[in-house]
Image 1: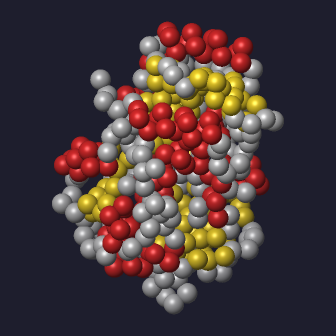
Image 2 (image 1 turned 45 degrees about the vertical axis):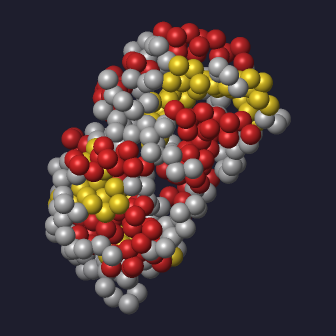
Image 3 (image 1 turned 135 degrees about the vertical axis):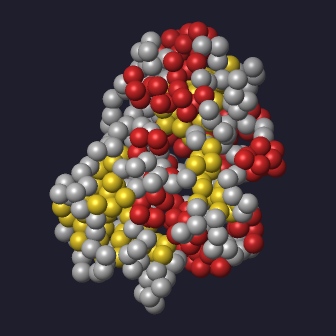
Length: 390
């Protein structure tokens, strides 16, 4: 049995599950509680959906459908999890989809109509889940804690996108989860570091300490990147810890052509996806759009499936781009895929990475010219775009 807890966030559709999950993970991160959020529903949402501008969210959201293959992959990754998990599940599970709950240990139940919690209580009982909280979600109204033990019960208000922070109920629930996710940083590293494939481990948290970044409210900024690279040897590395996508891409490009490994909470230690660039590349498990300007190509990469399987994606192809231009990479991607794409284009003059929260702004992760040094923020206007299928 997997030693790490997995807490399902469940309830009827439109109850505020995704917003609650986001608020909880933000609070747990602030308290340095190591965990990971697994989106076990094919709606394509994540932290970016709460932080990005609404127009960007509309462009990136991908509404998919549950399938046997999707459920198989979610169950597999839940079973082999390498960190405590918050599991954002769908609102109308079929008996086949209920297999996901067999891989969980606890449940947080939430509904806008309190009467609709009954079938979710029955579901939790069927699958042997310990119910941590039962919440009544209201659009108008304040939080009210009605009971704290053995199950946290009460009203939680204003679970709206872009709400920013939660109220007393979110804090109370996060404290319960903090107790369940009781592994210390030292304990987790003691479990994971001995299995690192390389002698050198780049611990993102320790790297931040070396740069003097505040431990309490640690926010990596692009201006930190040059010093982070100076502190990292150009050698085979294993990267561990929570950091922005552009930091991971820059560290991997800095180490190349030496081997690079990432610690993924679903996969454990794994190499970035092995991708090749060919003129005849066609969208498949990954799709893309190209936008061109005189000195760079903007490549937006998107998953071609609701839940990407690492083993199937590795070996996929990307479009061959003009080698004289820089490359701007964007898209809602797991780090192992983003870093794989960055490494595939490392022969270009420079590479920048975009976060969904930044819209048309790219962080240079590789380059040597005065205008394109690592850490440089590039602001882009709208450029012409085209689907690339040739």
